Image (cartoon, rainbow, N blue to C red; front, side, top):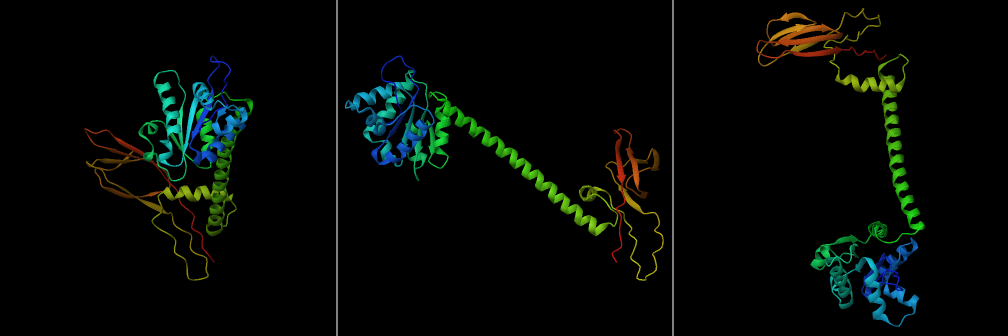
Length: 301
């Protein structure tokens, strides 16, 4: 029914044990909680285990002393009726009364088993922490009670190892995702290099250029493929079409030169860096720098 390995020899000892309360039908779960806490250096009291070890026939006296020295209480329950059984309810209500009177400051948590929902628990228990039984439940319980329970060096080692595992898991995940991204970019670069260029170039660099070039203004005129085997004529200068509109209309300056008294404006401009500015009386000038790049178009033979 209950938990924690209390010190029963003196009333002035630090109340740092964990009291485990459970109905007999839930003893097998309570025993797992008790063993896990004890194995990690936490003093825990569970009547079915602790009384057998002590060999004490004063059952009620030992239970009472354990409740007196308890710093935490864990209620293990698989059915709502079990939480209201006379012994279990008496134990957790005694602990809550001690907390309300200010004589205890520890945590009360309920460990629910199976399909039991928190809404099915007594209202008083629902006001405190509830943990669902799963593969991580025992570690959650240990973390929850470790602040008050007296923890041994073995428990401290366990907590440090757990934190380190979480840290390295994040590091490995970051390395994996970064490596995967580099591999994907390399593949994209290799494919783009093979399809679009005969010039030797670093595949990763080409991939970056291939991706970011999608934001560059594309030329409006392409050199058509010649049906004959004769070499194509030398291409003329390729320009891009620039269209500008604004509300309200304004004067358009291209590279600090007035090119239109009003918008909308349309013109063919060559590759390179261009400064665009729109001005209108009563409004702040609008400026933008535009960089035009020509993406090489290769013939596929």
